[in-house]
Image (cartoon, rainbow, N blue to C red; front, side, top):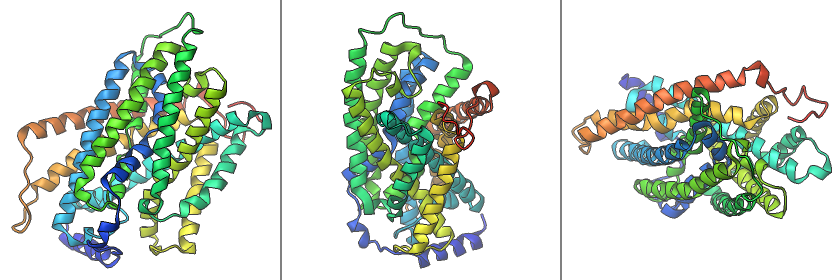
Amino acid sequence: MDETIISSLSESVSSKKTRTTSDNRLGMSVLTTAVFVAGEMAGSGVLALPESVVGTGWIGLVLIVFCCVNAGFCGIILGRCWTILEERWEEYEGKVRYPYPAIGLRASGRLMRAVVSFCVNFTLFGVATVFLLLSSQMIASLAEKIGIHFCYWILLLAAFLCPLMWFGTPNDFWPIAVGALATTAIACLLLLINILNDKTTEKDLIRPSPSIKSFFLSFATILFSFGGASSFPTIQNDMKDRTKFPISVTIAFIVLLVLYVPVASIGYAVYGGNVETNVLLSVTPGPIRTTIEVFLALHLFFAFLIAVNPTCQELEETFHVPHRFTWKRCLLRSAMMAAILFVAESVPHFGKILNLIGGSTITMMTFVFPPMFYMLLCRQKQPHWPERTVPLYQKVYFAEIMVIGLIGGVISTYSALQDIFDPSAFTPPCYINIGGQDL
């Protein structure tokens, strides 16, 4: 590793600190952080999980639990990585706009910092696009009588959300995280009630046998449902006591499991192979479904703001935008929204984007980088650093997680790209589909 490069980058970060260790006490509590973590991930994932079980069969429920446990553990390990950075380098005790790339930098050098930065931005950009598409789909369903086409709702919601993107860091908008989790929990409860009510009307259920392609596409969807690691370090960075981040992650993933498993299992049991990519579209229309759509649309508004924030912060660091509220922040974040809007209008089916980022960068950020960086950081030794070692059984476990993540991720990404470029499954972009044809 080039120590000169590392030193110069450290001085740059140190010179831009805006918060001291004592100021850090003004940050978020353990519970608030857990709400942020769960609120960011819950929502879009739960809607797609019943359909993912169709592609895997009942073993999909085992995959959901497997991914939840391992993604949660990797989130804990990622939190420990940041703790190591804080105890070794003073510049990380203050506010850092690009914490995950900083972990990659200290673990493996400048090239890895660039790789992590790309993965974080690609992931969160894709997640924000999925949230925009899903919320537009729900608003279009709610306002069907108005006659405004789905593609136009994407434009309207983007215009509405853009000014809300101008908030600074997660600590500036913690009520949004509470709203994101609360609306999802209520929506999941109502969704279960509605699905169970539909049980008596479903006949002749078809449960197709999973194929290799459907299995790995579904695996990518499940990975996406637990793919919040990209923003974990940014959320941890706003805590009062960052060493307690593992507690927050544990709470958040327990909440996710409680929300995900009932919806996935009951949704598949009731609708079988007839379930839509968005399970809500399979539910019988009525007052309960309308209420669910309202709550989930609200959730997606909130989750969009949480997901897009880390990428905005890193871009602001790159373009030397001040930490305070300025016109430069507004301009840069508005440009980000314009880019998200273009992708959403170009690929108006959220399932295709979800599968692609779920199988590619989310796999790397959630299952590969955290254990790899932790082992690399623990191998580094300096006389004044606290001693850290990784037991052999943990190394074996880390290796298993990384191998499964890599194999599953590569195959899932390949399957997702095949699906996107399949001529028979092509969906015209919104700016070509001007005639208002259903998407």
